[in-house]
Image (cartoon, rainbow, N blue to C red; front, side, top):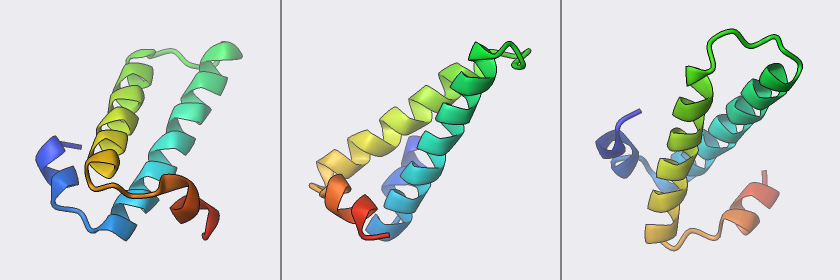
Length: 71
């Protein structure tokens, strides 16, 4: 996902996308640790997506702990 697409998201959509991206990164790390992951480039991509989403959320001063706890 491009940074410009993330910038155009609404706050709730951003928080939901962050949850999905964190879950995907976790699943990739788990598969890598168990030896099931053949293409490790997905790990780098997933980490970058999480970082982009977190950066935009922090720029907007979104309280991520409160937002993620409410869902």
